Image (cartoon, rainbow over all chains, first blue to last red):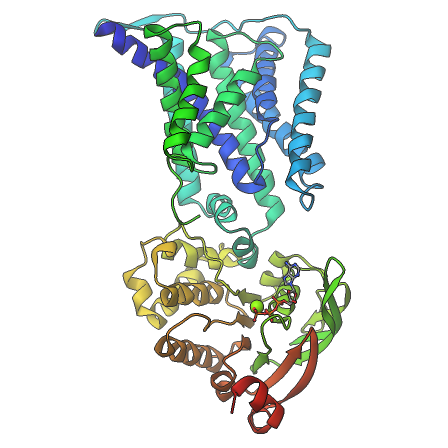
Length: 287
Length: 235
Ligand SMILES: Nc1ncnc2c1ncn2[C@@H]1O[C@H](COP(=O)(O)OP(=O)(O)OP(=O)(O)O)[C@@H](O)[C@H]1O
Ligand SMILES: [Mg+2]
């Protein structure tokens, strides 16, 4: 039983990270209507900014995460302005190709400057907590609490503020949004900034229990795609719950079945769920 | 208040508007008649800034707004209630209405006043205000669409076939509402195929065919015109 609960905790950790990455992806999908393949690269850049803010500038972990959020949000907005905005009237395939271009470009730049070495961020919190017989490293607790607070904050922002509502409005009916006077550029930039910041924070939270290297975004991005396909493209609760489903199944599957195949589990699940419910779990009839 | 001079609009190479010139004065209720595919929606979308005119000039109160963004036009007081409503289906009725007042978001008190006014105009929306707009009936959704447009406090309200697909009783109600909105001082441009009902509440009308304005006149002229009766009233 304890072993099981232990895996549930691990699943929650993974799921909250995946959820954060998938949230950004799903928000951008709502605006762009194409999957942003560059999202994984933004995640990777976030981890690097975090790493170097700590190692080279000697700043504290939290400052590093904040710096990563700001830098990647800006980078994400630059991608929108320089690449996706000029392509807004082009066929969707152009956006996809451009997104892959950004991905390759960012990876190459990072590799050129910082090399392909594997690096590790030291967690400032090395304590191991003991919760009723379960061991929980403080860093994992931090991930869970941090990720869910961020999701909560995003939820409040989208639901309770007028600017947040413009993002949802744009995703639900683009022309309708224009006709009430919502400015497409503002919404697009805001969405890309939020998505970038979420990816960077996810990377910063996850990095101390993982490795930092140029290709670190690949698997996370693929899983984030699985999540938003599962949850329904553009669905926000879908991204969070989808993230948890993948996190749990990976932790449990990796433990009870085979840790070698844990990365395959997400994709097996995708095939199974899509053959039962092809539109994803959370797509409503209205869209 | 609104003036178009020689406006062309194109879908790729297809010219959907061809040299459209029209003028609407403040306080008027003007009807735009035209068969399916005549170019009514294209004209509205061009005025709203969703489409850029390929030629010509559009002015509002003498100010050139040709090629401006939709948000700039809403800011200038030109608000469209579009064909097909284009609501935010997953959001509550109230949220849809509030977003209609997006350009006045800093004026909370004013927004609440307009909102109250609209809910008084459509009592059913008060009842349904927390339901997702997409779950309402067609007529109720049309009320949300009209209400959302009114939340923008338009100087010029453009309504694109608001009676489309509604039951006769609801259609009557929609026309009464349009008339009362106009009576309260909002200039209205109304596109309709329901020519008789529309003309009855109008000051003037234009007729559009194949992207060209082919006729105009005041209510009596239009109602008495043989060609108009034949083509749009069927009597
Ligand atoms: N997105 C588009 N791409 C290409 N052609 C279009 C497009 N939208 C409209 N058209 C064409 O432009 C012309 C005018 O269409 P428009 O929608 O403005 O007509 P309408 O008067 O609003 O018709 P309805 O009463 O059916 O709404 C039609 O010939 C139509 O086929
Ligand atoms: Mg039309």
